[in-house]
Every structure is written in structure tokens, then in C-alpha cells.
Length: 192
Picture 1 (cartoon, rainbow, N blue to C red):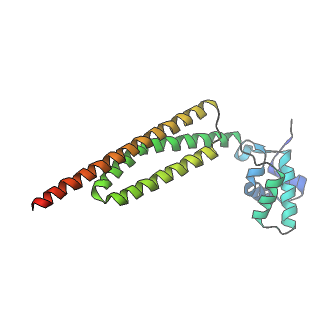
Picture 2 (cartoon, helix red, strand yellow):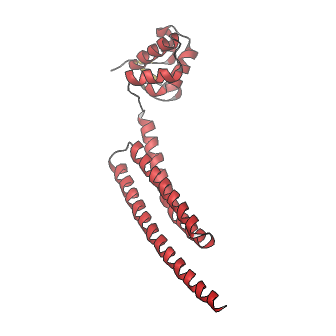
């Protein structure tokens, strides 16, 4: 099993002030391999190599963004199991919030359709659909989940797509009714 180190241990091994090690560990956390949290956090030996590389880069006066690029080429980025779980739960919560908000968004869009001009509303709905499409693409690209959670997300996306299709059908129905209303008002105006 890998040996585990505290920040004080690392500072002693690398002959560097603990405050500097703490700063580097925080700034380059995505490359650090560790277990535990807060005061219980212990770093794996791979983190020593990362910190040595960081020290060498700073010695060469490299800016932080270049150091991150350099580290990206040399070391894999790590994500703690707790972070993966939290990320998965956050993504699930976002999907649920979006599902809950869709009927409200649709009702608001229908009210606006009768109050405002049809063209403005169609543009707004198009923008909303584009934003929802972007959010779906972002979720699909960033989700790292397994088994049951994956099935739940697939179900949520399918339901969202069905809701989107319903919304499109409602938009067509509203457009049809607006045309009928225009015809009706045109007839009434003719009688005046």
C-alpha cells in the first residue's frame, strides 16, 4: 500500500515551508492524490512528484496557468470519490429542478403569448429551447455516474424530451388559435 503523508511530512521531505505546501496543494488540488478531508487528509506519494514539478516550474518563473497546462500533460487529474458522489447528486438535483420548472415555464410562455406579439414569444421559446438543449449537452458531457443513477438520468432526459415535444405541440395549437382570433377580430372590425 502507498505511504500516506500529512502536509507537515511533505514540507519536511521537500524542505519547503508548510504554508507554501498548503498553498500549492490547494491551488493544484486537481492533480493531488489523497484520502480523507480537512485535518484528516493524507496525501499519496504521487502528490510529492506533483509538488516537486510545481516547485521546479515556479523556480523557472512559469505563471500558474502554464504550470496547470504542464501538469495536465504529465499527471492525470484526480477526483475524490466523495467529489464524484457529490457531483452526481448535484447533477441529479439539477435534472429534477429542470423537470419541475418546465410546466411553470410553459404556463408563463402561454400567458406571454396572449399578452405580447406572437413573434416575440416564439423567439423567447426558441431561446429557452436552445438553453435547455445546451444544458442537456453540458449534462451529458459532464456526468460521471454509474448503474442506477445513469438509468435515472436517462429516464429524466427522456421525460424532458417528451415534455419538449408536448410544448412544441402546444405552441402549434396556440399559433393556430391566434390565427383564428385574428380572423375573428378581422370579421368584427369589418362590421364597424
